[in-house]
Image (cartoon, rainbow, N blue to C red; front, side, top):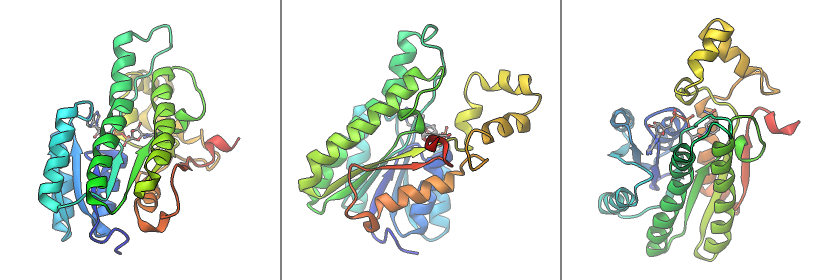
Length: 260
Ligand SMILES: NC(=O)c1ccc[n+]([C@@H]2O[C@H](COP(=O)([O-])OP(=O)(O)OC[C@H]3O[C@@H](n4cnc5c(N)ncnc54)[C@H](O)[C@@H]3O)[C@@H](O)[C@H]2O)c1
């Protein structure tokens, strides 16, 4: 398979879940992958891509920090000579009622999920303009950026922000041939759930981890959660030339969650 043959792609949050699945799929599809994450365990993604014969680099990267974005861009251009694709995927989910949410938590949520997308987009657009070949930016929002639910005010605000940031930049950068699209996953079985501070209490309440997952699976009309690979396939489509006439779009992959 070579749907990204010779393209150079940065994937953030690549140590786990959707980002990891995306980096591995991109590697299989012929991309030169710059995988980044705040967690150094992301190194194993690079090793897996290389073991399968692909080209990959891993960089420890805090997506809220502009100076490390500059380092990621410089290293990408120095190593591979160009940038074709950026996937802004890294994210966290802080769950609080609006009354319990502190200003510090609100700011942290927006910094990791929204400031990061602004910073990555800004520096990727610069690099892509210099390259003169256009490019594709894929931003990972969430169904929480489309519909509301309790205890997600900051998360939803961050993901709704990603949605409109993407559309505005899509229009602004269309003359450069730089496309900007957003994916909206529904519930996907990744560590983001188990890392939530309500998870242990939820497991105790329903009796077991498997019961907890079953409750989450029931939320989508298709009767299960998504798998990271299923989101990665959608990201691949938007990253590749197969979507060359697609910009400013919203690709929902949620098992029907928002169709009701
Ligand atoms: N899993 C879901 O149900 C779901 C649904 C909708 C949207 N999403 C979104 O998908 C994206 C990926 O989530 P996931 O489910 O794979 O979660 P995950 O927890 O498995 O992976 C997220 C990754 O982001 C990294 N990260 C966190 N803060 C960072 C920072 N400051 N700098 C760099 N990296 C950082 C983490 O180390 C982790 O490797 C997130 O933006 C999330 O909001 C997930």
